[in-house]
Length: 407
Image 1 (cartoon, rainbow, N blue to C red):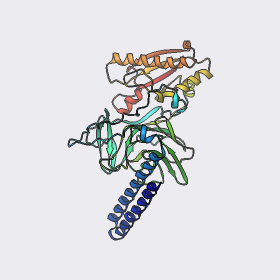
Image 2: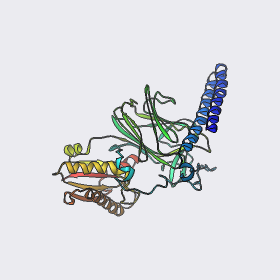
Image 3: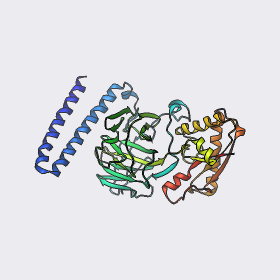
């Protein structure tokens, strides 16, 4: 207790020193003084965040004995590439693999939007460059190779994601997050740090700032230990944020607004302690599955996910699979054909085979939930029926889908 109190006093003392000096500088140096003041504020926030992390670790009796070793930051080489750090934790941590609808995933309710607005895994960019599809604002950021994927690595850094249209009433935002830093900021209207209406994510918590509305929740894990899947669902003013399978924010009156761009401030600490993101995807929401089936006779879903090159269904697919099972239970006369579709990466034969296996896997899951197998047929169409051109990341993402067709 004494050491924690001492740490708090030290942070408070540092805050006074760092903020007082730039205040004088601001009066004398104008813009330069303001930048010094901002840097001082960030330094204070870093010290506060480090103290908070130590407090969280101290309060958790399992931390010292059972936590996996934290992943080290990938260090950029002279050529801009990054060496995979020794002992780095794999994405998703060391937890045992779970099937859809089991364990913590049983209450997971995130469903991605059905129409892809933006998708980028940085594979079209050179390592060492800034992503060409983001709009650079400030800071120091570069693409690195780590854990078999491309990441945007930032000591700090602000950027914009420009969209082809204004964000709709319902939309989802997904990305992988790893690393250190003060509060990462995301805003849907204002494009400057400290927006009144924003989402904040630090190493162990998430926050919603919207005027007098202040949401807060634990991620249930630390982004400094292993990469974390962040998923944000917005429906009108309602916002939910998930870290892996845990729902960290549940705010019904967020009022974050809409525009045709998304502002992101990585807010990492340093080159040695950066923040990194990967696999950014933004989808427009859509109708309930049964409503779409009734109106159009078919509906595509982006919510059934598989391991790469496999027919094994990921546990994140739980909400969509449950919606299909509930729909078939509630409408006893409904019969479906489940179609598997792929993009055009790989051979046509392998894509067709994989799509057949994936459609069959969905049927197997539904039958395990009590649905009569005679009500479900399957078909694997591979890349023969694209929903969008395969010439863009968004098109390829849109084409990797499962479709439900009413019979």
